[in-house]
Image (cartoon, rainbow, N blue to C red; front, side, top):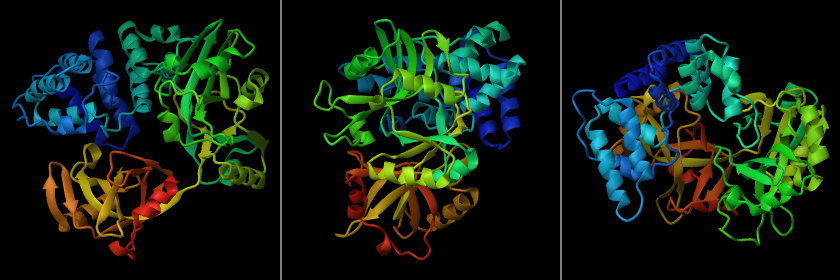
Amino acid sequence: MLLAEIVAVSHAVSATRSRTEKTELLAATLAGLTTDEAAVAVSYLVGQPTQSKLGAGYATVYGLDVAPADDATLEVLEVDRTLGEVAQTSGPGSQARREGFLSDLFGRATEPEQDFLRGLILRNLRQGALEGVMADAVAAALQVPADRVRRAAMLEGGLVTVAQRALAEGPKALGAATLSVFTPVQPMLAKTAETARAAIELLGEALVEQKLDGLRLQVHRHGQQVAIFTRNLREVTGDMPDVVQVTMSLDADSFILDGEGLLMSASGTPLSFQESMSRPGGERSWPLSPFFFDILSLDGLDLIDEPLQRRHRVLRELVPEAARPASIVTGDPDVADDFFTRVVAGGYEGVVVKDLTQPYEAGRRGSGWLKVKPTHTLDLVILAAEWGSGRRQGWLSNLHLGARDPRGGFVMLGKTFKGLTDEMLEWQTGVFLSLEERREGHVVYLQPEVVYEIAFDGVQRSTRYPGGVTLRFARVKGYREDKAPGDADTIETVRSFAR
């Protein structure tokens, strides 16, 4: 299959909001794949290269000065082989060799293919063909219920492997998927609720537990063997001797646990996510403490289809209180709000409110788990904007956010495209072009005159941006027509959140 065919369906999917139409477009594409092409094409259409790490960043990809080809000749499997060579390149001179591989690849790609490859390599394709839609498409191609595909992907840790086998062997391959110790499954995820009260009013009586801001861990054990996987299913057992030690202390022969690893201060309060992520190798003065909040399997008994109420009871019997997040069961919104306030005051990120009747929906951001976090806002100046791709083609989208420097000028904090409606995209494109100072590639730099209110979940240290900090989960709340650039929040205000 030509890469151009993948690019064409990617553009078509991004151009429609209809889930049904997206599914039909993808299913028609899947029907024409060979066995070898299936894994690559499915992976590309959900916006991911098949390689876990390519070693090619933004500067490398956008620094390639290669004229596009006139004709589409690139095969999907050729692209995958080239990216495989890029990923395997290491040692002295590796950067130049990577650039050589990529230059050759981009030189054979048409302009639309080059745009697609940039987004693919940087994992920044905004095409609307996410795994949920792709699962529907695989099901349509196989003429089976979508739940069969989702369950198989859940049990095998991802859609790509399942889709490849099922498209090659037929629907019978979906039945081969089973929950197995040492085969990681995709973690269950949470949607967002504004308040704990709102979550309880929606779910009724529920489990309300501390939300942990650490490293998501899935821990497997059978006998004396332990395997630990991260949220993206990468094995990190060798880096987690402290977690292995806790795991081995539990009184069972075989289990799969879901939880997070945190760094705790000497006073027993959690340190930040960034500090948990950057724990020095070999540093034992700050052991990573595991906290387990769910159990998928115990001594050969699968629990993923059991309601949370039973899973949590089994978890409490296996895992000591010190290795579980604090929680309550309540149907009273006032009690839930009070628990949220106490949890946040104790240094935790918020709470997760969980439906007691729900099974473990691996790989899904279902309505059974609702996360609640305090939201902060800042008034920031828009310093630049980037031309969008996919459905946002032709609009200035990704925003460069700046805080005011009291000494003069503005300090960039990072970027966001979240929270922008179509109406706002259209409006800001016109306004920003009237304020254009210069362009560099796909970036339009602006006179610093427009102030937006930006919501965010936290501030963390960053060596990437000049102010030394960046915003976590920044999203646009709206245009502050009443604010001038001199009214924007200062960089010191932003840094105070990090402290």
